[in-house]
Length: 284
Image (tube, rainbow, N blue to C red; front, top):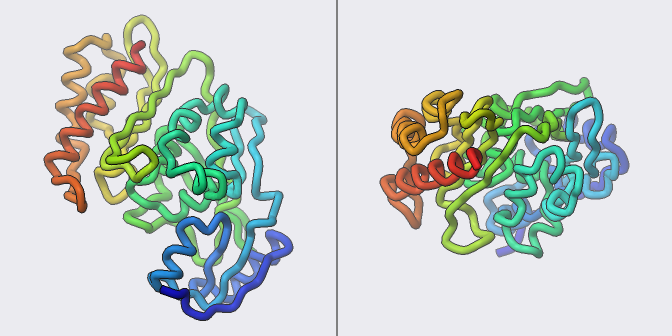
């Protein structure tokens, strides 16, 4: 199929892009890496009047660490995150997730911000950002606001982003050396979207896990923070019994629906297995 007709503008600055969004609102779409947008255009699932190309706005790319936070520009590619020593040191969960994200051709072009604003329930980056307590910097002509990752994802392909806003940067609190992270998922083929996955962070000390965060992907309409499972393991000696209790508690956190490949029961069982593996890995 061919994309519908649309106008095209390559924005020369962030200010110009914001002005165009203010003028055209939800009749416009942003083009960054284009790995999802081009497909939806060609299948006529998206029919914007205007395509605003922001791919050359260098101020929206790159990784910096300052004031105890890792700041990742929205145009930073998946591959760049995977190669970053700063990411491995201060946000290792992201480095652990990269090998699971798409395939090389997509990873080299697809962008961090593009994946986040698409909000696919089976994507890795949204769950990682929820687990890492990230904040999203949203910029419009009228100004900038910050939204916590836990409040950003509203449902399948639905976020708190307003029609005139651009996700420009993600701020992640840098994890100290005392933290551990684990990323586990199950997909039919490496690089495909996960049937179920889990992004996990905790601080192990004296045989227990504290500040535990378990964010699931692929088993709900948006990333799911497994609060009951977290409470079942938080601060308790990490034994087989504790892990079993946390896995059992997932029944209060998750209510997955079926997809084209797996039943709801299969997804739930996968979530339990992944939770057990992640908790054991965090405990070391």
